View 1 (cartoon, rainbow, N blue to C red):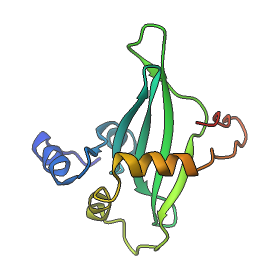
View 2: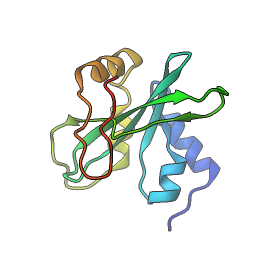
View 3: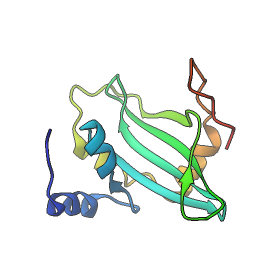
View 4: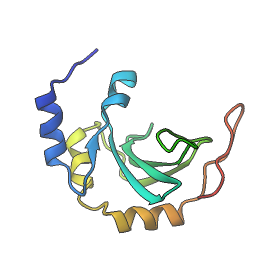
Amino acid sequence: MESMSKKQIQEINNKCSNNWNFDISYFVYHSEKTLIKKLKVDDTGYLEFRLYYNNENQIALHISKFEYDRDGKTATTEGLGKITTLDLKKHKRRIFNNLIAFTDKLTDDELLQINAETKTSSASGLILQSKDF
């Protein structure tokens, strides 16, 4: 498994625009570099946006809605969330710098607009379909 230093992670975060960050947890568990951003929508929860390459090497965005538990300290999500392809171009390689550059276009307002226009993903098998958000 590839490892990264705190310095390398900070360098990635410094290159990102609009408060996007390197998703350390996803990297540790999946050995894949993705970017993440959380937007508080109200006192009950927040939206989490994940920027990544899909299985066709296109830049995609996954959106999940997290709701705080009664204690207000932990948040959970359920279902598949929403998935949309942002760049239809099929890249030959998954170049992480392309994701970093894409964060320049993804402001808070743009992300909220994408969320409003994207339908929840269809359920299949054991995974539930998310409530619309």
